[in-house]
Length: 241
Image (tube, rainbow, N blue to C red; front, side, top):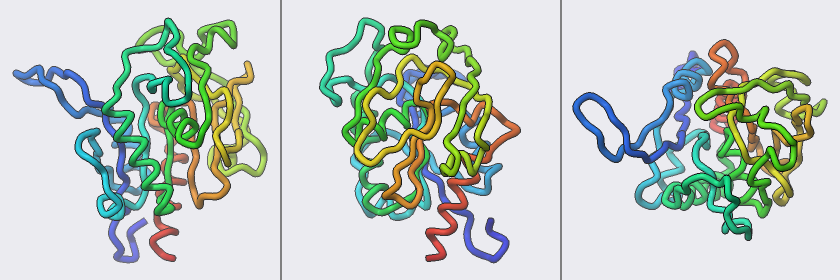
C-alpha cells in the first residue's frame, strides 16, 4: 500500500472504556481486542486507537485516513425512541456520545468508515434507524449469540453488485456475537447482506464514497482481512484524489 513512498494509511478505531486488569493493576482503561489491530495491519494500514474521552473535533479526524467503529455494548435505546428491553445490557453512555460524534465528523469529511457489529448499529441509529433490541424475540433462536463470550457462525448472503459482495463474495460464513440487529433502516442506507433467518447483516451508504457496516466480526477470521483491505484501499484512493 505504501510502496510508492507515501505513508501507510492511519486507520482510527474506537475502543472500549472498561475496568480492566493487567499486570499489577485493575483500573478504568481504554481497551480493544488485538484482533482488530492485527487485521488493520495485515490489510496494509496502521491502527490508531480512539478512546471515548474528551470531545472529537474536525481537526482531530482530519488526521485519519479511515475509521473503524468497533463492537461492544448495547447503544442507549433512547437514541432511537425506545425504552430498554429486559435483555438490554449495561449501557456505555460516554462511549455512545463519543462515537456518534466521530461518525458524523467522518461522514462530513467523507472519510471511509467500516462499522463492526455495534458499529453497524451505531451507523443505522445515527442516520435515523432503529434496532430490534433482542434478536431471539424476532428470529426465534439465539444462533447469533449462542452464549456470552462465544462466537457463533452464520451463513450470509450478499447482494450482487454491492460493495461488500465485491470484497467477500455473494456468500460467506462469518463469526457473530450479537443479540440486537437492525429493524428500520436509517436514511440513505441499503441492506446488502442477510442471515438465513432474514436478519440484516450488512449495509451500505450510497451517498458516501465508502461507508459500510457488518453485523458480524470480520476481525475474528484471521485468514481473511478483505473487508479491512477494502477500507484501506478506500483510504488510499481518497488520499490520491
